[in-house]
Structures are given as C-alpha cells and as structure tokens.
Length: 312
Length: 262
Image (cartoon, rainbow over all chains, first blue to last red; front, top):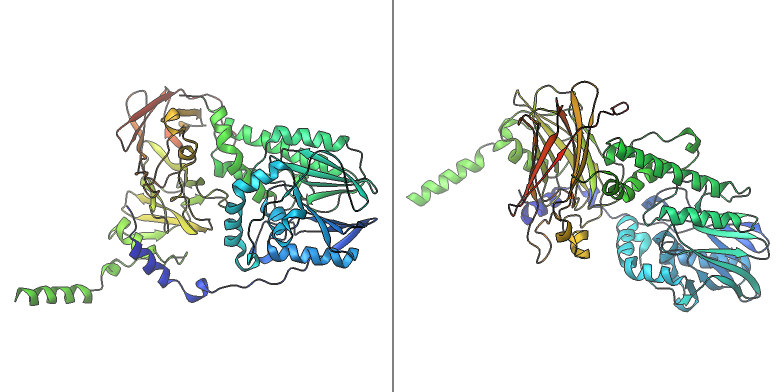
C-alpha cells in the first residue's frame, strides 16, 4: 500500500496552524567559569540536543595566551561559535587566535564556522570525518535546532595537529591523538596548570554517547588518560572533574553497557527490550542515562546480533 | 440523459455521509492520516483504542532506517492479526502478522521517513480492531535513502543469510529470534526498484504453521523478527520469500535455558 502525494499534501494542510507555526531561537549566553590560572570552563547543558537548549550541550574551554585566546571546542552553530568567541575576548582581553576541535560531533565542531578556518585546528582524522559526515550533521542540526543554526555552514578545520608538544602565544600544550569515542579524539594538556581537556573521551555525571564509538579503543584511550599526569580534568560533557573520578565513571558505564547488551542478545531480547533494561543504581547520578542507553542499543545491537546469533 | 444520471449519482455519493457512517473513534494522537488509514485498513469493522495493546518504542529515533518496535497484545484473547503501521510513512504498513499458533507478540524494526505516529492494530476473533501507538520524531530519509549495503555494494554477497536462536520459555512457549540479510529496497530510491522480503513463515517439526508474517518495504534493511510460538519441542523451520521469488530457509533448535522474567 502506497500513499499518493496528493493525500499527503492534503493531510499536511489539515494540520492545525499551531503545529506548523515557526519557532524562533533565543540568544546564546554561554558563561565562563575560571578553573585554573588563565583557564576557563564553559559548561554545556547535560541534556540531549534540544531546541530548548539551542544545542549548547558540550563543554568548551578558554585558555589565555599572549597571542590571543585558545578556544577548545567552538560549539554547535555559527551563533554559538560567535558567542564563545565574544566570551573568550571578554575574559582574556584578547580575541580568539586558535580554535581546537576535539572530534567530529556537531555539538563540538560546527561552531568552527564562526572563525577563520586557518586558525581552526583538528586531527587529520577529524577533518576526514567532517568531510564525510559534516553535511549530514548540519542537516540533522538544522532539523532539530532550526533558527539557532541560521547561517551555519560546515567549515573544515585547516590546521592539522599531531600528537606531541605544541605551543601558542607562549603557552605550552601537550596534544594527544587518541580514538575510541570517534576515529579522532584530540586531548590537550595545559602544561602550566596541568589541566586536561579530555573532549568526549570522558563524560562526567552524564551518560556517554556512542554513535561512532569503538569500545576497545575507547578503553585503551582511558588507560592512556589515566597515565597522563594531570590536575583538573575538563570532560566533554558534565561538571569539572577534580578527583579523577570521571575517567573511572566513563569506563564503568562502557563496561556495563557492553556486558549488558551482550547478555541481552544472549537472552533473546530485541532492541526495544534491551533499551528498557534496568540501569544500575550506581548510575543514578548520570544525566540522560536512559536516552543514551537507547541510542547505544541503536548503535551497537545489530553488530552484536550479527556476531552472537548463530548462523542458521 | 446518461450524463444527468451520472451527475445525480455523483451528487448522491457526495451527499452520503461517506464511511464516517461506521463511526471511527477520535484519534488520541490527532494524526492527519488517521481516517485515511483506518478506512482502508479496517473497512467497516469496529475500532477501539485499547491500552491492552502495548507498543514499545524507544524515546528517540536514533536511526530512522532502523527503528525498533515491539508489539505485545498478550492481554487480549484470540488474536487473529497484528498490523504495524506508521501513518506518515510513504509505505505505511510494515507487517501484517497472523500468529497462528503463537502468542500475539512481535518485535521488528521499521524505517521512518519523518515524524509520525507508529501504531499497532490487533484484530481479535470478535472482529474488533484494537489500536494503540505513539508519535515518534524522526529525521527524513528512512524510506528514501539507499540502504547501507547498497552504498557499500556488498548486499548480494550476503543476501538471505539467516541468523537466529530460540529459547524455551516457562510453560509451553518458545521465543524465536531471526535476522536476515536483505536490502529491503523501498522502490523510492532513484534507479533501485522495490525489492523486499514478502513473507516469513515459522513451522513446527510436525509441520504445523506457527507464525505467518507478511512483510513490506517499510521493514528495515537486514530485517530482524522476534516471535513467541507455541509448543515447539523440536526444531523450528523458518522460511522466507522475497519479491523476486527467492526463498531462504533455516532451522533452529530451541535452547532449554529459560529467560529470566520474560
């Protein structure tokens, strides 16, 4: 049975006016919280990407240097990137001179459109990811965030970064090229303060998301992060980690997730049933836990079934 | 003269209170397509929105090409058919299931082409359709973008590969899960004609038909199905046929390990 075009148009016209009314975005008002000497954290909402939060869900960091501010993760949209740029100028007294994009996901990357691509740096893997998926992400963000996205185009980072020492404006960094949350996860250690910007390899009191995850590589990255001597850790989502608990929490969730979904396939559950499984009490403090569990079922379940259900 | 008669007949048709005569209940989901679908699917039968039909879906359509739906109508007696449909899909009906010797339970995955109600309609022996469902928001393209295996180009290498297992439940029932590799082309993608699994049948070792499922192009690529069939002590046979007439089959012997709490 197929619908005719005419019946669909008729149905669309029959929708009540309110359902078709345009909604308008507000203005981004990110706030910077000083966390170390010359380092500010900008907190995202610990929630899914929603029109109500303008997609401002990822954390960003601002670091003051002599040649201008460093912005780590420029947000989801042109306006978000501009607001973060203005915030960086306000707190450091200098315009943004360098932008790092930690990985491909739109809540971290698409705000790069607000800056000269020549100052936007990322891992080569991340640029390749954005070349492949950027337009699709942009479409998805326009659908969810509509007016918040106005003017946003996918701008590929032009600067390549590689693992090792780096410096900008007299400030020394150590960069790490990791993977696991995605094919390219950039981690930045600020040498002066020992502050570790972990991107989405670390979530804190907010359930990790897995759309491009490789769980084996992600765990290996968490091992490396544990071994990197650092003080404060800025997770990609959730509050500042002062005691190192966030790395362990992220690992705990990933281990539980994989074991639980593997057992669900072995027990004969289908995807909806796996997505409804109880979440242990120790994760009660994690925001968006049910939402991310159901997303992860979508990402991981068909692969687990292909591996674990016997060939007939 | 003839023309006048036709005209009169037309006017009479227009004046008649068309099929609203069979008094469809108001749609709690306020779907713009409810009456359109209800008239075609249920004819003049009695239709009731009934929470006894449980339609379990995730809170988010993370992947509009693979959206899981579980229908559980075990609270209803004597179920004859179960339809799963999405009002605003270009191919609205995904499956038409006759649980011949099986519990009125079915889990599968469908494509979504936009925000839409996703529903199950369950026909009981008294001729009443019991309907339930919910809205789900979804990005476009579930039905009108090419399947992943078409993009990768390896669909033909794995066509019809069947995986599955069965678990003996407490009592006399067996839970059967089957997955099949198939592109499930909708015919809505340029230069790729419709090509989909049309039918899946489950038969007991004694030759009794347990489950008879008609499948349409709205079911997700590489379809997966979960059935709960009756009294299957021996191996179960699964036979599937696609719209090119290719047939795929497999046999699975139920494991005795009982599922916890299911």
